[in-house]
Image 1: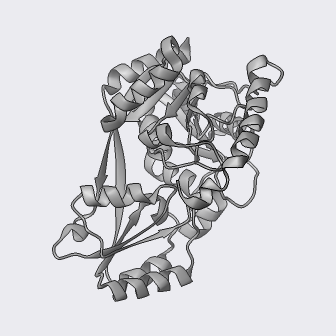
Image 2: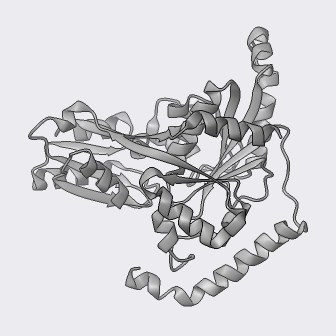
Image 3: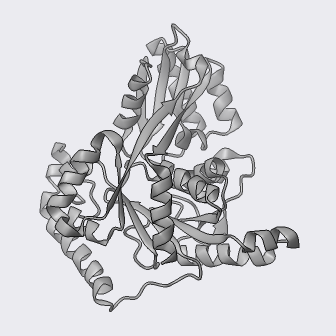
Length: 349
């Protein structure tokens, strides 16, 4: 833990007490979550970011659609301007769209191919989603859609207890097992909170460690454990020798991006890190170009989450120096067929 986070250790008990009071209200029934008409599958994590929730939501939406479900995603849209509920619709201006809807909802809508709704109150976003089929102009399509099981996926929903859910899926990483509660660390909840989870998700290489730690805490209350395999694909122009790209990203855990590039056999000339959910500007592009020239870089590489925030003029500034490659993180759910069967049984139970 860095020195500046250590100085916040005295505030951890204050945070923990507030968290305990909030959870006690829901656990005792004094606070009641609001319920939507369609089942809700929550996907969340213990940490403030970096567990891979967004790519997992994309994967789960695709798998559920393949199994005949009509799926939408409900998201807060972290960092977006405005709070009212609305459907994510790309206008062609990436920077403006990311500002309006949030970078992650925009990426989910682009990759998952399902409707995505954002709102400060996820319940309001869910109501909007449930009204959409009634407004479908094509009656034959409305009838076909109506015969499918409708589901909401609640993005980053483990701590959002104001909305009722049928299933809680929680991503857990090795780093979570070694972390501390906010504000000294990045954990929003302790491991003991996993007793509310129905399914845990761990990276394939961390599965045994996560399972062992969870069993120590939860004992017989251990939920199902899914494992996912992560892979990063980088376009060919970045792999061509002797390519020396400048890598840049705005992530909660930028070290994961750097590690994934190395695992893919790419050695960046320099790595530039921005704050998570950073909104890029023209000045940022000029700075990246200057740093690329100083480092002898001949191209750029970034993440999908960052790329959705770059409009055409921004990309053009970079591409005047060298090609811009987008590293795509994909997940594969191990034994997906059995996992989907178990999930749908829980949802429909």
